[in-house]
Amino acid sequence: MCVGSDNKGWSRAGGLVVKALLLIGGAVLVKRFTKSTTRWDHARLVAQSLYGEKFSKDQASRDPDNFFNLRWLSCPAADMVDGSKVLYFEQAFWRTPSKPFRQRFVMVKPCPKEMKCDVELSTYAIRDAEEYKNFCDRPKDQRPQPEEVIGDIAEHLTTIHLKRCDRGKPCLYEGSTPPDGFPNSWNGAAYCTSELAVLRNNEIHSWDRGYDDEGNQVWGVKGGPYEFRPVPASSFVGMFSPLNFNTQAMEKRIEGSFVLQE
Image (cartoon, rainbow, N blue to C red; front, side, top):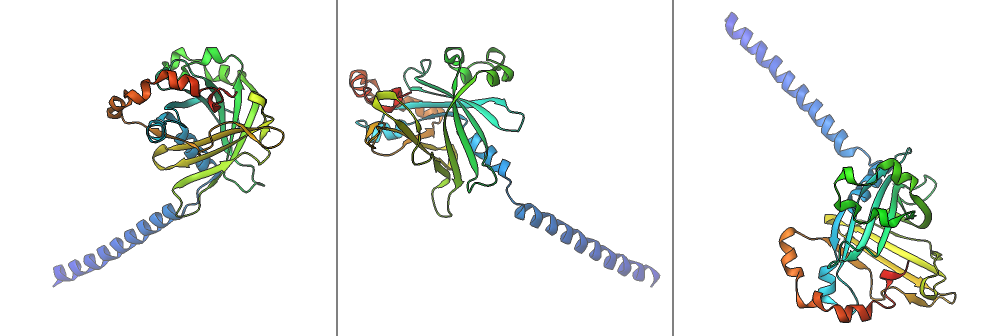
């Protein structure tokens, strides 16, 4: 009887322990799932989505008269004292990745608390762009180091304010420059505007346009944003198609294209 009585006591005690552990575990899970996303979490997510090599191959295949197969390449370059991430960014034609036509620093940080947005994305010119060509393709010890990067950040060019997309939309974040854009004088423009959307699977949609004083578009594509998608290694075989080797047509269409605007 004494042994039986002890076993029942231990069973009751064990049951209480299991219940307590379940309650504690449940509380931890609830806390984990209800933890609010911080302003810096949004900035980190956007920065990570911009990283890597992406191409507009699919879009160029669908609409070769209006879109080129461009290469998007971005990677971390430095961290600012306030926690802002500085990315190096370049674009090139897919066939000539070593000759980028656009090079920028991109600074990613949370929007100011007084603004109704989540992430601030600002682009800056590079003091010596030639020194940074193919920055992301090089081993880290052969790149300009973070302290050099910070010293090479030149004039501010544009700023986009991103918001989390509404539930049900295909994007994660989207935003644009202010309606009046930023000063730009290429090809007769007075100002330029930019729109950007971050989608799932690190897909980026980007649309840059230039306008004259009367509001007429003078450079940039008119059919919508460029769609940059990460390309699996196995897909590179398909990139060597007759479409992509039509260089003469491409050189003609390059005149007036957004790719040479800055």
